[in-house]
Length: 399
Image 1: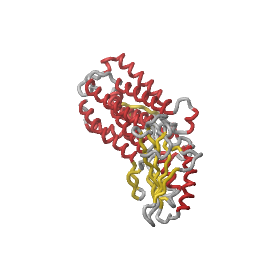
Image 2: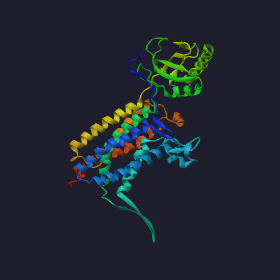
Image 3: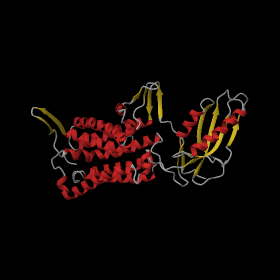
Image 4: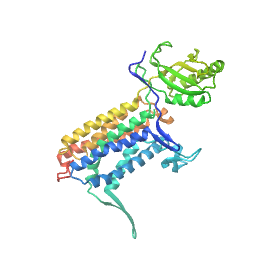
């Protein structure tokens, strides 16, 4: 019976809500990525003898690049059909229908964020000059060209840290879930099922809660986690026949949810619902404990978070101990090879995110990883060819 290496995950993605104001776990993790990275960013600039004001100015460029790139990346790569007729909604964090609400952004893509960062740094180094007479557009350097790779070499260290925070946010949202493990370990992502059932039976059920089963109330099924679904009825529901009929409907809903695309639970259709009806005192709310099973899935969000955090630690140690002898572009190239390589591997354990990926041999995340891996390989080979000539030798400008 799966118990020790399993988890039932049913966390509300909204930490706090008051009126139209909403504080989400994902937003907290996204903000934490910037807040944790800033001290490291300032430290690396100080070690290079660069002004703190320069680090703060560049942070603004990067923040805009991350937000714009991540959002556009999701829309273009994954959800263009939804937004192509409503472009304003791409960058609108609020909705007015059916009521005014601050919803934030429902989709961000890490590949888009990476592109946004590169573009932001480019415009930090260069500026566009437009002349009307004669008409021409020019790029004028505001800073030395070698600054471009210097910034990227340092920024990738923090990008790994940010990636770890973002994937934790995905886990809190129960999104980007993994495929079934087919083993006696994994996570049951129960929130989606609970929310749907809670909405469907809101008129009669006061609370609903999924927990791991502690007793063998059902025959043990391999690769499934036994669950206890506890239902607390509203005080006015006192007729046991009404409750029995409702549980018959619940059985059908559990079966239906067991055969949807990417199911989270398993309820066999050929058997009666297994449950216990509890009423401790007269005129007190009835409770029902339903025994069912959850599908164990790979927590791919945590796999990627752990990978990113380990890469952050190793990259920072590498920079701290070898920054004077690493060729310019080598750290950025190594990161661009390793992170997409890990992403490519993790994608095999993920469920597809959009419907069109079902027909693809490689999913969108894997296809978008390939160009970055080629760029990383090119930069590594280039840095090997340059050797120490790729290091800026002037004081205050070394990597």
